[in-house]
Image (tube, rainbow, N blue to C red; front, side, top):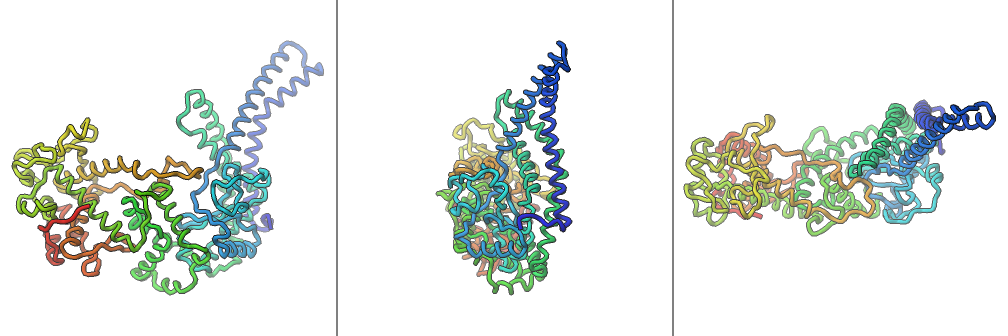
Length: 628
């Protein structure tokens, strides 16, 4: 079946909406041809003697000139709309030879639904599935004709009409679904998606979709920056015309898509309707686990220049852990004995690696390929390669800020001479912030650059002493206490209370992180794909890094210092919690009660709870720790 049945209400509504969209295009064409038609009438009237006289001659040539200009503008707009490249979702192509069972499942599902089978299958690192039209000539080889899946493959000599009337859309599947769902659940989830191929190949709906996508792409072309003034004016006029057309068909296009979705859902009810209800529960669970895995586990690794190469396999571990903790998820682990959908792939490991690299690119903006500063990490190596390095890097950053502010221990300097200790930051944050601030540094102490670090009347931890970025002309010409430090911003209302000394540390940490971020593009830029399907300058497309508040930043660094002391003095080890990310393991058990004690120190300057916890855990404050 290559069309949609006239008996389905949703299908009839979708076609009527599509015709309304096409009528907008026809009206625009009629407006463009109107001056030319009027010019033809005037010239025919003059040649037959019905419109004689000098006035009619002037009118004929004036209208003819207007008609030529309007036609040229219409041709220009039409060419831009036709040649503009519609947006394509970043995906991992799955050639048929690498997943014959998956293609067989999708084709059997399409046969049961009596709709055309998708032309190809691709994976996306997200918890969603959809159909995507890739028949535009700028999208390269025709899907399904070239099984290599390589973007550099030569284009086939296929007519544009053949592309648009025969080719079915590409089925895009969320990669977490393949690893978490069972084969039957995946079939039930994909049923309403595959059912949408019927409306997709209906001529009127396909033409309406191409028109709307072309207008949307033309808006992006007209809005591109970096043009000279004459061209800028031309493209501004083009953008005005295209936006006017989009406004005219927006409501009809939205109604068409809603009707298409309703028709697909109606048709999919004949396939595993009962199992679809259960599968939808797995969709929500997979989304929760995927989001937690990206933000708590993958993001720390990406910041360290490493990307987990088995993110989809990590989803299974995260959701299994969630099922163990959450009583609402009880019983979900029993289904793990059934055949997982990833078994439909010939090489699930290589596909998972490709999807993991794409996820790092989309959500973090990392390079397109692995390199010395952008290498994969296995889950077994994650605690040592990511967690340990993260804690020691944060602890080293905190120590550099303490040095820059001239903070020295008032007692126990002999131990401090052999290396940084946890007691240094603990005593600094727990000391009174007024009057005694300058006492945290020795009276004659100097910063790394030799400048006085603190005097009785000027506390080195005073936020007003920090310098703004750009105030120094050269790092070598300034003292270490002033190099790169930015003026601290008072904590926002939603960050909670923070001591004065904590605010000074936040200022230094923010400046240090800003300096590292300015240097990051040189290390994170990698080779790009030859024909990227999205704007490389917009990466990351879906950033997962909300700005951390000052309190959160300081808590993270103090926690890292505590964890380093625990590993170096009490035999603790770094670990991985699938739901919470990096974890400190003491005697094989996760230290879950550390966070509130660090918060008490940072927010209130109260070291009591943290000191008690450190003593109970056997952690030595005065022992030096190893930094990155």
